[in-house]
Length: 172
Image (cartoon, rainbow, N blue to C red; front, side, top):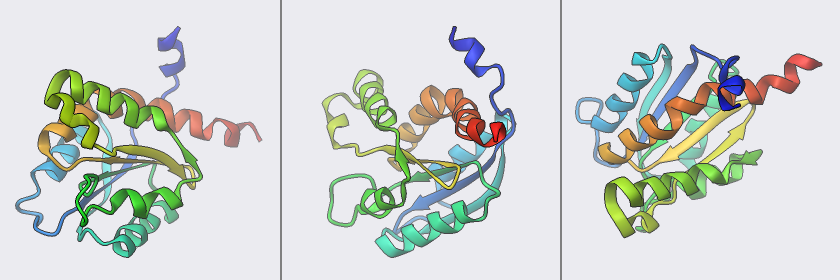
């Protein structure tokens, strides 16, 4: 039963939130604030927060900084997932993944189609993967997309994902 798998799920995670944007500031970052608010409402805590430009090297080094610390369980990157020339979040992050979880992007696009934006969901390149025992999500930067991803997928599963990721480590 699914609930049996979630019984041992981590309840309080150290999280990083990274907003990829050429225009947002900490005062205007509604999506980043929404992610932080939803995380803390669920008992998780913020260990790292930054707003960075939509530039491959900057995205890559910031995600590496968060995952290399060994103190963060989950990283949520929002923004830069579209198809414009400036949207390079996916290209920056995919090479960092030791494992990819394609079901995340598939489910996000399905839910986006069903509840939010219809056929425009094909423009989303949301992804998820693992690096150095850290779960990394990359989601679109709109507040609607952030809310959908957080409420319908990330918050219900992130504790279970972290538990599964560390299962082999505890058995050794």
